[in-house]
Image (cartoon, rainbow, N blue to C red):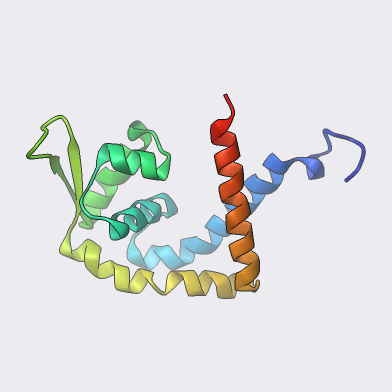
Length: 145
């Protein structure tokens, strides 16, 4: 590391930002045939893990503000992958449920992680180590006031 603390190459934020944009760009051609953007894909991943989910639960899981999440959900509803409706037990709560089409697209999406790993050309062990490091960074940042 050079002695210049403000050198761009020394900034963790720069490395994370460029890496995130670069990896997300690899997802774009994989997600287009499914009519999904990367943020919508993240929503679908959360719903494939557990369905239905409240808007609050999705917001917390994805670490997105409800105001950011709502337009994503509207577009997914137009695509036919989800339904949004008021909870029958608490009408203040919005419930998000996969449709049959949303469940069916999972089979196609299951091929995406393998394709991304292939396109990156990196050993899976390196990617797993990176994922662990990223989770450590996320947790550390969350603890910071």
